[in-house]
Length: 206
Image 1 (spheres, rainbow, N blue to C red):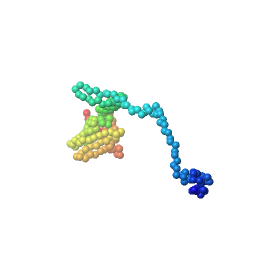
Image 2 (cartoon, rainbow, N blue to C red):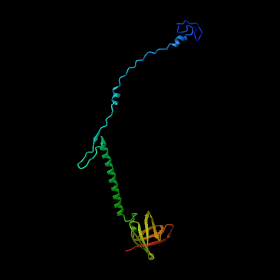
Image 3 (tube, rainbow, N blue to C red):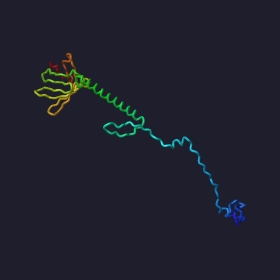
Image 4 (spheres, rainbow, N blue to C red):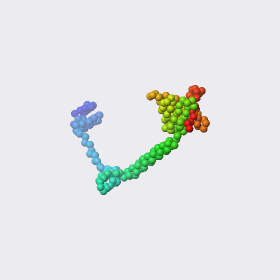
């Protein structure tokens, strides 16, 4: 019998070559037995054991059946009633604030003499040249009586400018005029800012 690695002669009962140390065919054919491993179960820590317990949600009954009708029993999580009450209180505060603002706005707007807050325009004005009569109302509308016709118009004030839009047979014309009041607000003078020499004068009708 010879070594399969170096060719040295070996005895039949020898498992390794004495020259190179290679295992003989007889030793290679025998399976190597592994020592059995003993598995021991480690105890589960108490903290982990507590988390293995199922969590039980806590509920409280808040809806009760009343006489004359049936109300189903719904589970409500503990603490939900306080959150709901807080939400309802916040909604009530918002609604009250909104209503108060609307009332204040309405009262102040109602006390104002015109849509733009300038009450000096409200009333009836006569053209000093006899060209017509203009009625300014508090809601920003008006009527021009001229040449036997009654023409509607709208008006507003933006700073020192009068925005005047008159309607005639389905057409509208807008003029932006400068203005001033004299004679204790009983005389109104208007003019085109681009041509201040042309001035129209009106006096308040009695």
